[in-house]
Length: 382
Image: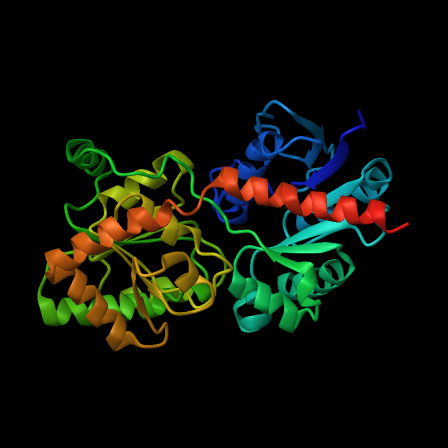
């Protein structure tokens, strides 16, 4: 029997810390590391990371860096030097978030989560934007395959990174099985424990410009003025960058007691926040996938999201879709769900059905098939 292929996984963005670093791409890395070893035979895996708290599942070897790669500069240097050296002992390296060593000694696969730094450059700090633009364009052009987390992101990679379409493969994210409805008495107990209002609309995500929070707050203010409903807006998530304007807008609109900021939400509490909300609203301008929409629907929470980028792919017909630049339309959509119980019930049922289409074991299996196609084509090449 031939030796299994040795696949390296660059997981240095993995963070189990209770900060915004523990959100977003972190979930993708965490679940792939857990599910890849069981996704198919013929591979052995080594994950390269720094986080000391990550418990390795069976079938996954860990190579921890002695450098603290939470610093972007140290991580970049580590990837381009130490990781490049490790590739001499690998059959394939998967960069789980945009980057790969420029001097890799083995074929590479790179996952692109979104290209918001190219679509909305003004929403990023200059260094982040310049580095991500440079490394993503180089890494995707040199990669044997590029994994995009949605068809929308795939089209962006082709158009903005100038990568041939046949090299770019869509592998959708999954949703963790923890995200499901719960008994109403348990949900009520969680609301009381966390001091949450009895009725609230929820946004959950990192506070950063592309999430379109200013539009949501303005639409919420407009809906409250016309409806007179005593329903709070809860904005849950860690502070990313350029978040100050969100707090300034809430103050300027006189909504300080109506808009509640919870800060970063620990992973174990995420399902409960979705369950406790009467409505989830996520009007983002750009998402590579839009995992919070999927998580909310899996929990049975009626959902409103935007027509932008990948969000219609994730939501299907199970959420109300609105133009992210139309405040009136967003306010009207909020009003419809909050005043029409039949609509809320339909969205709740449709959302749970839609969420069943996405799973992490399925994503891991599709990812392993990408590895297989690259490695088998490499063997056929000579």
